[in-house]
Image 1 (cartoon, rainbow, N blue to C red):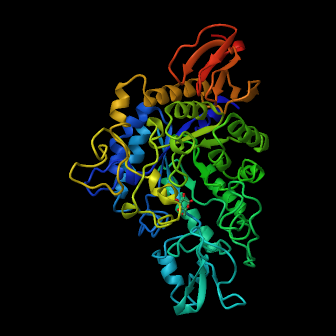
Image 2 (cartoon, helix red, strand yellow):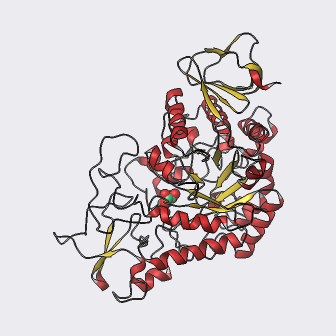
Image 3 (cartoon, rainbow, N blue to C red):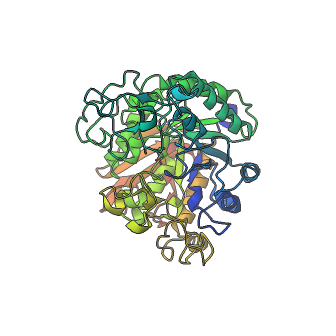
Length: 537
Ligand code: GLC
């Protein structure tokens, strides 16, 4: 790859940052974060060193699913700000060399979207076919066995027009019908509208969804209990994951590629590709003519062990097409925070995981708060906001609110997220123990370590995906070479001797110096980055 390509594909070797706008910083005193809050903390993000931010949904919405139920794709949610704020945010991020990605939700709309209001008017409505309608099944109930994200039937009976409509998520999130050509033209326009405004790309919600089986066949039963094998006893074969969806991304890629390479540069399509099979994942890259990045959920759900993570990495790299850029993330607003899921709040493990994330080839996506080791927060039932998982039967740990709580800026009760007299929309976590202000001053903090990792990543990757090669390591450890670096990581609670990487250690997750010698001994849960022997000092 030439350096010009590296500049063009600015996400190669980059660190993106998912920012849940509602929980970032409240500048207008309503208890919700807003775009003004994002602008106010751009300097922080620039200090941290991220290359781009992905904003969780910003479009007008009744908020049954906090913005994932869109009622206007061309607007800004009034709780979050105005279009002027969005323009200012894009411009001011750009002045700091940071790109802005928006969250685009093409699988479904809100039932309050004018398209659905028209479609639900009558069976003859002009936009009826924008959605998926069907009559009752043979038993007089729903048309087939599809279930929504809560485990209930995915079909809502629409009394006024005597048909069911499909909702893979909440009943107020009717699925769009991608067999309808006008849906394609609408979304092509929506995409252009935002890219024209200087947005550097989009994260595509439910990217594996879009098309549904034309014959509405029943989903087959789940096979095995591996993570992601199925949900509620069924595999998602016919209500999502249809091959026709790839055609949509080929179209969108042509649109993205029609923009000039000058800043903000090539436009990025990043898919929420919720698939377990690495070949399926690879399929979303197409022949470098579909998505440029496809999120890797098997990595998210892998165990925090050497074989667990290294196995997913090896398999992913083996299956992706040549030249495709892998993307690694460990936390998000649905799956929770890795310092809890992987690390149980053990800071040694959090530092190790950050070091791994920062040294894998491709693109790394951090979730707001990862950089200070924020953990999931116990949100009591009476304060829960997420309708999809509220009372989901798993207690607070199964509720997505746990990872959507206010960013912890300082040690005050609301963490500096909002004014003292305002109640934040979700309660803050342990702000006294974990906050940006305290960690920024402390050279030994997780935050300063994370910043050092990002800076090392930039220096080493320099706009390249980075080559990866696994190295021999004793049981419990994972060793790999990436570019000119050697990474040694001890995923165990006992000391582990590793081969000397040959060059100096550049960063250690424990901050402690390592004794020199032909073999080095990693402390429990310690990881280091060293210069490789053949790479010079
Ligand atoms: C995606 C989003 C999730 C949302 C769902 C429906 O999985 O990440 O938050 O509830 O899609 O839009």
